[in-house]
Length: 509
Image 1 (cartoon, rainbow, N blue to C red):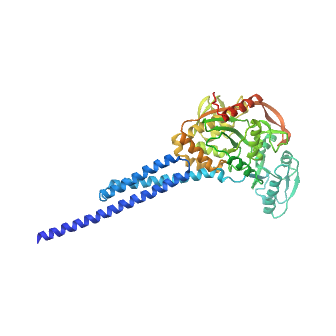
Image 2 (spheres, rainbow, N blue to C red):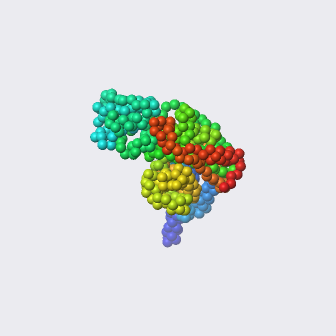
Image 3 (cartoon, rainbow, N blue to C red):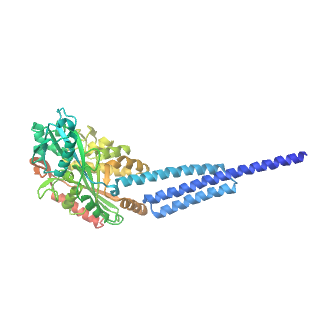
């Protein structure tokens, strides 16, 4: 009788053990199944990113699937009791989820700044009154006389005035002026009580009237999308370039505004990057903002500052440099003050080499002492260093070299492993203040090609030079402004170096 009871208990225990084993095995298979599913999702995101060469994707896929297969087999062989393998599977699944989110964010961030998401250029039209005027909004100006000028941005002025009249509920009185300087002068002299003008001209007005922006108050801003097929033409030219094996020129424009980068504005930084992916060479050429040149399609044979070309659109800046250096420029990237400050701060600052010791005067946003040699800058300091010219004996010539030093420092830090890990965060933070017409596919091909071939790049910098002068400019014909007369020998030297890079010749210092 006792033996029978003992046998019954043993059988019951075995059944319970088998049930537990089956449960463990089921849980193990479920966990590995989730891991395999997440592995496939992760691999799909890698493929969607399009930047990692196929051979690496295939190798990674094999490793991940073999690893998952081993864990699955372990669950069967051990009858489901492999606790450690289950924990490994859970940990691996968490890593795959994190990796998939990382890849998703990276893809979307790059797409946001690529040509695939490029919108129209925007004219920011301002309504300004004198700084001591009681008006705080457009509705307060119903009985004001508005000073207008249609020589520049005529259609945008009309669109802005339509919005003004809509807000007031009636048509305001206006006075017409031939030039921007006359219009601004009429406001400062009290001949009109308000004016409407393009924000891109604000800096130019500061050159004519001392601290113009400090003497006026902005009570309204209207964003007007540019008309015409300029964007289509630029994109068409860019689409023809095979960035894997063709040498191409890339225009980097630093505009002097905060906020949306699509806003037309003066271009304070004008750097031309000549890239040869075959020889892995990059020639960075800086052209001073005050270079006295013609603006094709705009200045009608007259000359103007290079920086003013940006007011008419990034395509006009590109055309100006194309004519100056006798090259074709299919690509551009635009950044502004916001993006530079944000990017440098997100990187934890940059280490910049300065040729000279000097103290900035504050026009660039910060007063600071710069030492000769290596300096560690945060975002605002890097911007101030890049914009300073009055404290430098070389003026614009030296400022151009300083800008190149900042860009080089940023590039060197961005390619470090720690920064590559932070790439999605960096890109997402500046996606609203950086834009390029290089397509997502071209960005993918460029990165994939680099990962395939490996190796470093040779980077050389050059700066166009000239001499200071005072001349009338197309954009401000009534007042002589400071300009820089190009040094033709300097320009010819740059042309020769660009041609050498295009021909595959190796550059030497």
